[in-house]
Image (cartoon, rainbow, N blue to C red; front, top):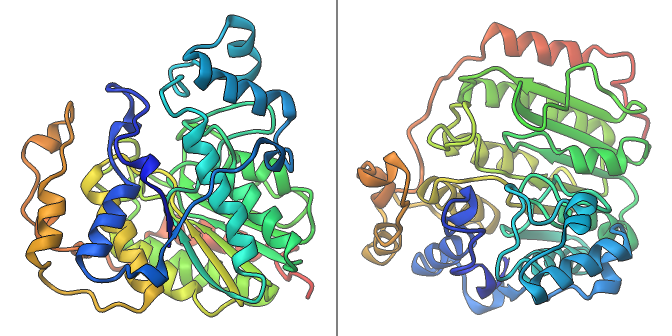
Length: 370
């Protein structure tokens, strides 16, 4: 696992959805469970500005660093680069935090030169563009992950995104790249309002918008009938999974109804389908559901046994969380403190999701050449 203390206490502001602790909760829970010994954890490095020029423009990288130093941006910078907005405010670590996430993504490619698995829960910021911040994302670490993997010998790369929001920045980067397969599963009619079923780039882009209320039965179907078959036919050198937790039912920024078992099932299915696997974080704005989800993901990746009842040390981590300003945070259910796995939510796919998966799998370009 890659992580850093910069995430602990770092907040986009007391009113912003990213005011909640996330990566620090995953690290603390994993350590409390005995799943994160020293030899399985690396401190994420902060990317140097020049390294970010691999995809981001020098002018934007410089503007982001200057924003943290000054604590503000002027109107021309706000208009050009999307900094200092409601979605992407200037906060105390506005340079250090995303640069640390980007540094971990660049490191992941180096670590996997000869194969393996990396979990980077601080990553997954898939909305940023080369010259602009967007959607709570300042630097596009999934793009940097893919480019780093490619520099380290992985030619054919599959990017799978199960965040509730479409990964528009990653699609912008690779929709015209025949060696990158893009699969995005996201809620329909949800910001950024891209990623339509008919969108296909040059034939390597598969977007599956899901209806409101989509549940575990839908997730299992799209896993087994869309994601896994496409990956098996491509036989990629590497897989990058953006594992946003905002599709979980309790999340305030989507209307999907997955349990965290859906995320666990997708992670387990992808393991072994490529010699290199990077699992990133992403969205997730309920501190209990996102912390439990990504810790459950780490259990799958690391081969840990998940207890039915958490030990007191892990329970204390979850009982110590707060979610101020959110109704659910005032009376959280007991299982948010005592367990990692949710109860399952739905076992059969809806006809609507089945039809959309079938539409994608019967496209004339679905047989990806080896």
